[in-house]
Length: 98
Image (spheres, rainbow, N blue to C red):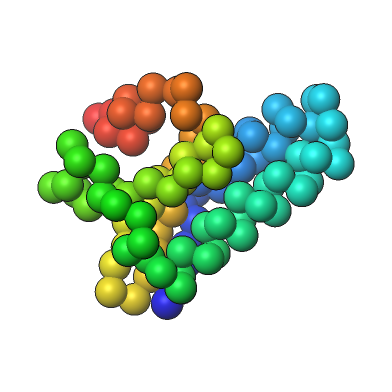
């Protein structure tokens, strides 16, 4: 199974890395690598993380890594990472804005 990071997810990683780099450039690099690894590892067990209850109709799942949430959809042949957001953010607005 292949894992694809959407353009918004890639932009999220860049934004997260930039924010962390302002305090610690080395930690920014290692933390972004951790987040990427968590995304890639979804290929092995894409349904290990539950569908978010109120979003069952669109089958969005969520994996937690530290304070960050990895939102994704698991298809038959691929996992699509939709967004990677801080848990304190209003993710509903970011995931479902018109």
